[in-house]
View 1 (cartoon, rainbow, N blue to C red):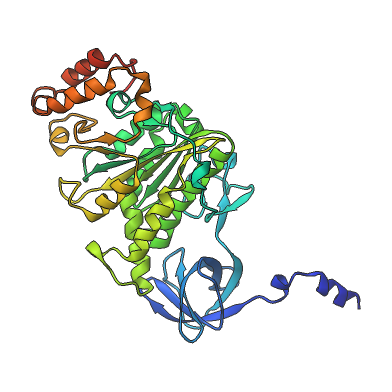
View 2 (cartoon, rainbow, N blue to C red; view 1 turned 135 degrees about the horizontal axis):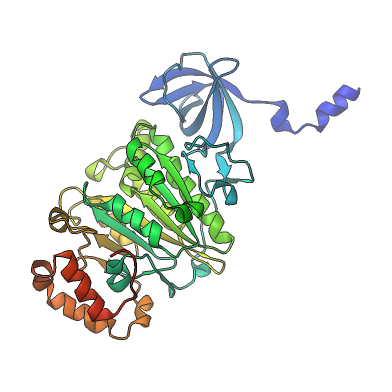
Length: 404
């Protein structure tokens, strides 16, 4: 009788564990039967008594079959393997326990350090109410004169850096991380090469590393890992914002996040639309970007890089969508990059829509009108670094930052 009473005290989720088995493989996804899982629910596949593979449900098919995506490669998966549902969505550790760490998309260490231990939070949270957002009226200094002087960022603003490959996006981000005045910096490196991730982590200064968290998913990782890395970086930034910090969220790149979602969507049977992007991509981007912003407690200032096909950022359909979702865009010029001018910011073609943050500069509107009129003169005469730096300094009298 005592045994029966103890069994009754256990929750139902512990008494009845749903178990299914693998029946087929579709690309990088798995099909399982005999188990019911909700979309977003996590589970595990028992490869052996000591080895298991974590999976996530991304859809379901007829005849009570579910579509699973593993967090690792499908090598070693065979028919008949047991699938055990955990009955909950994915969660990870956030907060002070992850400061100074390099983690992958599911929170496992990549810096050879110990596994972070602490309170866990679900990646999917309740969207922020529009009325709970605060106005963007405080400046976030980045230490880059071209940005602070003419494309000033505000605390809670979301801006995109549009550029092609080799334009100096990563170098610009590293300079911003070392020169920013934000309390906490969260970096999401999505789809980058492993060498770039290692260099990015090692080149951070000692003081910058103490307040920085890096979530990385390299290009050889599965699409679900690249997608989780974007959500994980946003979750950690939200946690620090709720603690009252001014957070800078840097994501490189948003294009690879969209490509990861497109890969998952096509495996689940979605039909591609413009440039091969599935409808789930268009649903993902605003959900991800709207989680940044300013609240009564703190703020998340988002800097998202966008890879551009060719030299024109206005021809790519994904770039058009993102410009409508973001609060501004910084365009890097190929001509300036080829001339050795870094950061290769096209100040005339870039835009910061938060006009209220220019209140600190009385003659900013006059300066901007004059800059627009001198578009040809700017690009032909003021291209050399020394000339542009001197011109900006004497025109708007900005403070002497370390980086240009």
